[in-house]
Length: 226
Image (tube, rainbow, N blue to C red; front, side, top):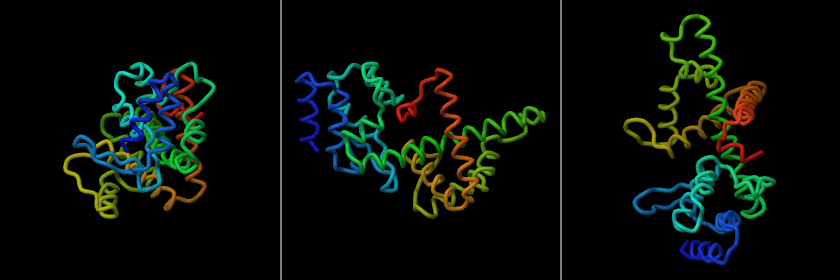
């Protein structure tokens, strides 16, 4: 994909807004997985969820010095656009500049990874508050209880199921990429095994959790969808 990277460099050097140049490059990028400088980059989780930030990281790393560092960090880490583009969103830019296929993948990633993580955090927060009220803060595992409540299985059991069904191999813990893949697997597992009312209720908890974070003034990578 050298031609895509070269065009990205040329477009930025010609004075075009780097954000739009980046989105055009994302739209032109056709490789779904690659090994670059000894690191594996997998841009589509389960062939469905488009990790646009990982691809953006890869592309921005190829044009070092051409992008303002603060703006680059905001889009790569927080998922927020520069102030001059505040009327836009990452979702709208991907849809208009990268095409419908990547936009659908973006939504899969948003709901399957970002919102799913928020569901876990929201339920864990509920359980933590309940445990404190019961003076059980130090004798319980809030996170494992949250997973049992959401998925009806412990984290350890879910990890073993994930390993068996996907043939994933790991030693101690999960890498960031494996964590995202596991989270997306959990999302699919929840949708398949829970009744529709519970799926909707838990998803709303995640969405409300994200909204609270954004309304509190704490930036997060997810506010780009709004």
